[in-house]
Structures are given as C-alpha cells and as structure tokens.
Length: 270
Ligand code: NAD
Image 1 (cartoon, rainbow, N blue to C red):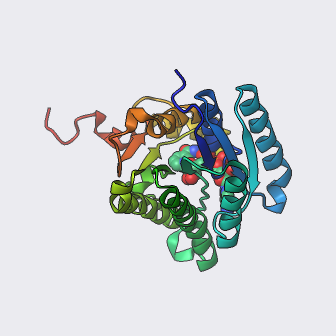
Image 2: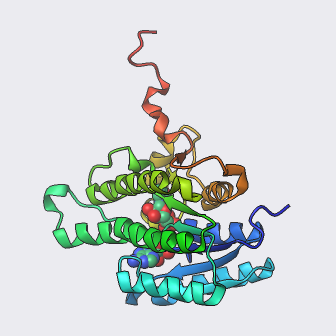
C-alpha cells in the first residue's frame, strides 16, 4: 500500500539534493508534490531544469506536481507560494522545510550580511513557511504535518560555520516549540538531522578524493549518506507509521553523532 496516497506536500528547495530525492520518494508513495525552487541569477538555468526533471519523474509515478518559485526568506514570496499551492490544490497536508544554505569563514572575520542571509534562509524561512502551514492546518481543522531538515549541527558545534550551526539549532527549537504548541490540534512537527550527505551543498569535498576520504573516515558507517536515505525518513515521518511521534529530531548520520574518535578506547584504560 502507498503510505502517502493523495497527500499534498510542499517541499522547499525541492529541485536539488535531499529536497529532490524527497519529492521523488513522496511521489513513489502516492503524494502530490509542490516543488519550491529559488533561483539566483547564477544558478537559474540549472535549478529550473533540475526542478523540471523532478516534475517529470513525479508525473511518471502517476502523481500531480507543481513548481512554485520563491525565496523562503522573503515573507511576500512565502505568502505567494502558499496562495499558489492552495489555489491549485485547496489543501496541503505536509510541509517539508528543506531549503538551506551555508557559508564558511572564521567567525571573527564573518560579515553581518552573510550571517543574516544564512539565518534568513534557514531559520526565518522555516518559521515563515511553518506559520503559513499552521494557519492553513488550523483553518482546515484536520491537522497537518511539518517536517524540518536540520543537520547534525543542530547539536554538534561546527567551527567556521557559526551562522549555519546557529540556524540549525534554531530550527530544532522552532520545531519542538510548534510541536508542543499545536499537538492538541492534530499537527505533528518533526525534524530530520542528516550527517554528511552526497549532494550539491558538499560539492567541494565530494569532488576531491583526499578530502572525501577524510570526511568519510570520521563516519562510523564509513561513507557519505545518500539523499534517498534522508528522503526515506521524511516519508516515514509523514506517514501514519509515525502517528504517535511529534517534537523529535531523528539523526540520520551513519553514526556521526556517536563521536567516532571513541572507536579506540583512548580514555578507558584497556
Ligand atoms: P542543496 O544545495 O542541493 O539543497 C539546498 C536547496 O535549497 C537548493 O535547491 C537551493 O536552491 C534551495 N535554496 C537555497 N536558498 C533558497 C531560498 N532562499 N529559498 C528557497 N530555496 C532555497 O543541498 P542539500 O544537501 O540537498 O540541502 C538540503 C538541506 O539539507 C539544507 O537545509 C541543508 O542544510 C540540509 N543538510 C544537508 C546535509 C548534507 O550533507 N548534504 C547535511 C545536513 C543538512
């Protein structure tokens, strides 16, 4: 049986990487998927064609798809995204807050504009989309599901990525707060925290064999994760199999958060 048959789902940043894999997985499970994509000038063509490819894969699975352009950091864009999706489909069942960006620099050299942009896309974007989804779920009166994509850096510090780590910790807190605030309204809110996943955001180390080996050497399971392995957990959390789960973060990280340096018992005297 298809677990997500007939559900309407909006995925932010759904044209590439984890968002794309999630869109395809949800369609495999019977959902209709609205793919939000954002294009800055330099990425416009690639993003649009990725979004269109994802749409045709969804259609092949017998589901409906929509493309909705918009910057999740921008309140007007988010309101329009929801108007477009609800105008076409009348109801939304699941929101996946997936869009995210990261930038690296020593924190004492970081500029405030970059810091603000990372927080705006990752955290304000998740807030704005969640708020619109909750408004719709309350109007409709039959609950709904919000899923967030954080990172192991929701809890693990990441030097040089202060804005990213702060944003992901913030989304974790946002998700738990909304889960508690709306549990009695049938709204479930859960979070997936991926480890190192082979997607465009990690292009730099994925394309450098030495750096990739170094990254993978820190992962107990011994390899980077696949976007499909994150999508599978999103699909579970959107399904009735997870009907009694809310306010949780599930780490999908090949054991990264087990602190692999402890594989050798350097502190235990044996
Ligand atoms: P990705 O770069 O392919 O995906 C990010 C997506 O967000 C892109 O489609 C991008 O166009 C979109 N986006 C960026 N700014 C946007 C905006 N303002 N409005 C709407 N969309 C916007 O990389 P990914 O790995 O698939 O990342 C997806 C999510 O997973 C991100 O939130 C990222 O932080 C998180 N994550 C990734 C990893 C990993 O190792 N790949 C690990 C932990 C968490």
